[in-house]
Length: 182
Ligand code: CUA
Image 1 (cartoon, rainbow, N blue to C red):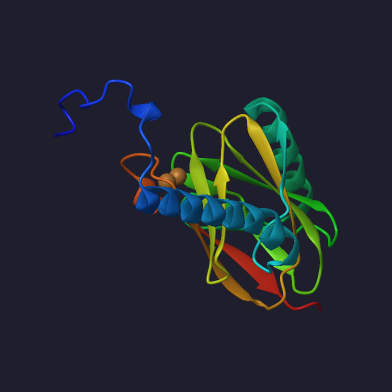
Image 2: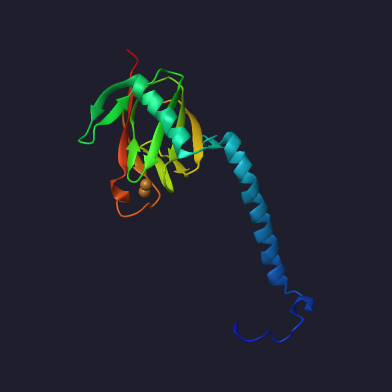
């Protein structure tokens, strides 16, 4: 019998089950339940899991908030595209825009301080990958993602788009500055 032929017994579900088959079904079922329970377990006890929030919003509303932050806390500009570098106060809400094919603006955060990091895409799916910390989150259009972050070490971190977003996906890279408190 092959898979493209009809089964030999049309009422196949009334056939007695082979012991080896039921054994595998039971093993697979137990493993599924185990893996399922690992999801909440890692969320609570795993060190790498992000407890992120997401809110529905629009590009206009979100851009206005990001622009307000940039206008208030801009400290310099970088690259030919004059991307503003922004140093918002510790504990504040910081906004990052993902769009084809750029992250905007550049953020400068202080080590040891906590920030509410907001992320949103202006067009379609991008991925926020922070290296070498290995933080990874999908950035969807229409949603404002919020993470509570506390950078621990000063340095220059890389932000890489981790979801294929078109012809210039590979150029969608940026930086995150973390500086020691002065
Ligand atoms: Cu944005 Cu890939």
